[in-house]
Length: 211
Image (cartoon, rainbow, N blue to C red; front, side):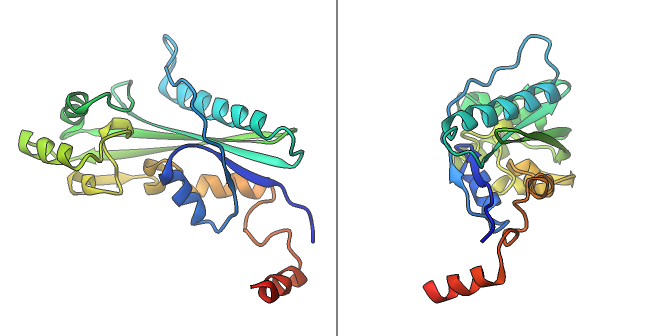
């Protein structure tokens, strides 16, 4: 068997975990709680890149005892007219965000940072999402679902919010929080993708016998 780095996802997001599992990889979870506040005058893409990098770097400190560890950090933000729409603090805040997004096209920026003890790579995915006009009744009904809670821009594209999205240009998985194409590109550069890379035919036989 050839040694291969151990991947860790530095994220509390169950959506990111679900998406990463789609690539067929084994990975650990690093449950980090870092401050996410834009600096004065910081551009949205610079901010998203920085947060992703800080998550990956903080995650690497947690696995410093594993010399072959690779940590993936990610951040996703909704941006409209240069303003970053983070996670709403309550239902009223969520309603205000949805009113702003209603009938308009906004950007969703997802940044990735993959880091090991001796290497660091980054990638960014930018998608455009258009919301159809939403009435006050539409907004009230959506708030009842609680999908908005903990979501940048107060919506989850994988849920009921799809009924309001009239157009998407870019990465669906990126809007969810982990652009799979860009993730796969980084994983390949670290020798972690496809999932079977680094194995010999005998490894697969041994796994079948063990199951």
